[in-house]
Each structure stands twice: as structure tokens, then as C-alpha cells.
Image (cartoon, rainbow, N blue to C red; front, side):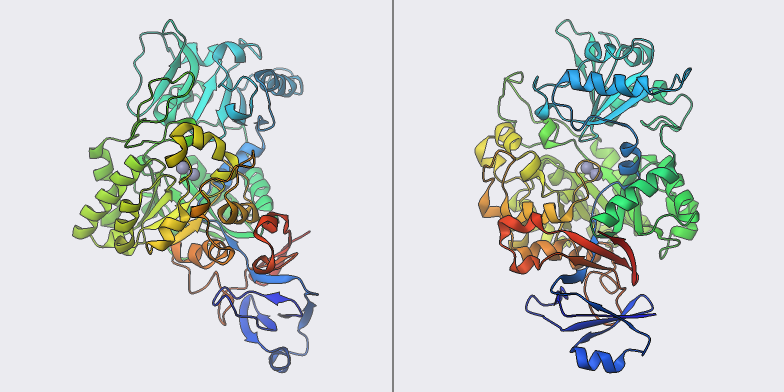
Length: 542
Ligand SMILES: [Zn+2]
Ligand SMILES: [Zn+2]
């Protein structure tokens, strides 16, 4: 099968000034890029010609960090994203409860509430959620997925009292008298509810049966393809998530490439357990390496910092937040992954977390170079400092930056960190200037898998209230496009097959309504994905 694309803007992502007339696709690969008359000679008589009619053809987008199946799972939970008050949260849960079949006693789970968007400006408490039900578990996940709130059924079921100490690497919220208020911060604290939410299960926070993984995969894949993404990540997979993805792959429902990173605290035996996915993609799925999470998130004031947060109402004497793992655990995890020669991607939001990852990679990498050869990644890198970036460059450590933070939480960061540190959130310019490779992600489901919004955010750095957030950290449209195509391909070790339009590369393509390089920066997010092509076949059309 052959397709000849012509008469539009063609971005090869090799050189910014490239402007070939045509691209010939044969059997899912790029057969040639060049002048139209020459490619017509090379094309078979039966080749389909696609007149781009002035639209833009470029490599499709590659997601450098997100959670594909989680996105699909959350899509089937109670949607709290649009709640603007705690009453809205209660109403959303009650509406779901009212639609339930008689006798359904399963927990009510909602997702994506954001205190910043609520008129109360705070997390709900167990008392608030008791208004939904006092005999069913009610569980609300914060947008960051790093914190959550449960009702009294969960608090009591977990046996939490005023005397329960906070777990290492986590925290229970408390009322003034010290009794738990239902708020659970970070996985070790959230895990207290897991046994009540999914008794006897693998300890996942999403109750078994709350979402069918095949349906979840289908929902998520459709959303990614709609946004022009043809390579996605499952960037902190527990064993149940891996099984779900394996099921979806075997059922032939993936429809894009998924790279899985098992979360390191659930062990480092995934490659042995799933040898069929240990090498190249099988049915669209492969194991990429391992994921380690070192801290929380800056918008929730749980990113582990070297200097205290700025004081705000309700937190007048702030600290630096805290690490999730002890140094000994981090040492053991990194060593185990390095000994296998696997890629390690590490969630670091705070600069203290970044320091621990850079220090550890330097030390263990000197002894076990396979750690560095596997292209280690700092995921989020939201407050990484210049002195740390200078050490990342020679290590070959990639900074995968969560750049749309400037849009979603730019105003919060300016408050949480004060103007100097706050404006430096997502420091992509500093990273590039120090020779660090940069990729840009959405951390879906934390934010939607919208690459054009991500590119717009990195190029403009404007908050929801219209404030400029550190304009000196802006990058160019070309740099942002590279970060979600060829640089993201490099992060996956797939730069020879994806991310550029060159002969022999996979024909993973996207057709946009306009040329990003010719679009004024402010208007980049108005561009639309019109068509997504995976291995030469159209998989989405607007
Ligand atoms: Zn993360
Ligand atoms: Zn993530």
C-alpha cells in the first residue's frame, strides 16, 4: 500500500528550514521525502494521492510521560474535574449513586478534584464526603493523583485514629483535635484506604471491577489518537495495570504503541515475568524500564524542596515537604535497575528530590555505566536548579518537563514558592541552554493529553489568570515541537524509527490545521489535529 502526500507544509523535524514538496509512504514506512515529480515517478500506479491543500503534515506526537490506562480508568470514574465547590463534589457523587443498580455496594470513587478550583479553596474532609454516604466508602482523588480524601467509612475502616502516626513518606490530614479528617497525602498514606477500597486485591487504589481494563484502554487510546499521539506511556504501572495492558494488547485493542514502566517498589522482575514484551513492541506493547517516585507535587506543596515553601494562609510556618523513600531504598532500587541495564525514569518535582536523583545517578553510574547508557530521565523536573542541570548534561540525563504547569498552576506556584522560585517552574530554557535534552509531557490523566496546549504553554508561559510566568524560560516553537517528536523518540531509544520524516522511518504522522512554525506563538493552541496516521494507516480523522 502506498500513499503520496503533497501540496501542504511538510515538517520533517530534521532541520527547521526543511520544506519538502512530498512524502511517499509505503507499507507503513516513509519510502521517500522530496520533490513531487520525483516521488510520483517512484510511486506505484496504485498509490493513493493525498492533497494536503495547505495543511501541515509532520511526525505524530510521542508522549514522554503519562499514564495511559489510568487515564481510561479515571474516565470511567465520577468526574470531579468540573466541581467548583465542595457541594458540587457531593452532588457529582450523589448523581452517580442515584444511577446505580439496586444492591450495588461497591465504593464510590471520584477523580480530578482541584482545591484551587473550589470556592472553599481547600480539600474536602471526611465530614464533607459523609454527606454522600455514611455506609459506602466514598473516595475522591485529587487531580495530581498524589493525594486523596476518604469519607468516615474509609477512615474508620482503615482504623485511623488520633493516635495513628503518619506513615514514612506520607501524611494523614487531621482536624484541630488530632482526629483524622480523611485527607491522605502520598501513596504510603493513601494505601491505608486500599484494603477497604479493594479487599484482598493487589492493593491498588482503584477498586477491582470499577473499570474494565479493555474499556479503559479503548477510551484512553481514542483520546490520545484524537490529540495526534501515537506512542504513549504507562509511567508507573503496578502489576494489575500491567496485566490490564497485556490483556488489551492481546485483544488487539491498543491501536498505538505503549511503553510500560513498572513502579520500582512493586519489584524489578517485570522483564522476566513478561519476556514477550521485554524486547521490541509486541501487539503495540513493550516494557521500557522502571519508574521511581521521589516526592509529591508542587501545587499540593508536597514536592520535596531544599528551601521551605512560602508561607500562605493555613500554612504559616511551612517546611520543605519530604522524600517518599529513604536513601537506602533509593540506593537499592537504582542499583537493581542498573544491574539489569534498564532505563530508570524518576519523578522529581522538588529540587531536593532532583538532588537525590542526580547524586545517586552520578555515584552508581560511575560504577555501573549501564545506568547512564540506558538514558536516565528526570520526570517533571519542575524546580530543578541550574547547578543540577549542569551535572545532568554530562550524565546524559534527560529532563522530561511538565510544561503546561505554567498554565494550570502558574498562579499557585507564584504563591507557593514566592516570585523568584515560582516563576522558574518548568525551566525548559535553562535545561536546553545547559545542553540537557528536553521532552515535554502532560502526565495524563493529571492534565489532558493535549500536545498543542503543552507546546503553547512552553512557548508562552501564561497562567490561567493571564500572568506571565517566567518569560525568560520560554522556548521556541521549533524546540517545543522537537521535545514531543524526535527528542521524545530519543528518550525511548526509538530515534531511528520515530520522530522525524526520513526514509525508512515508521509512517506515524499527524495532519494539523496550520503550520506551527508560521503560527504566532499566542495562537498555537488554536491549531487542530485533523488526522492521525499510525504505521501508514489513518487511525483518527476529525
Ligand atoms: Zn509524577
Ligand atoms: Zn506521572
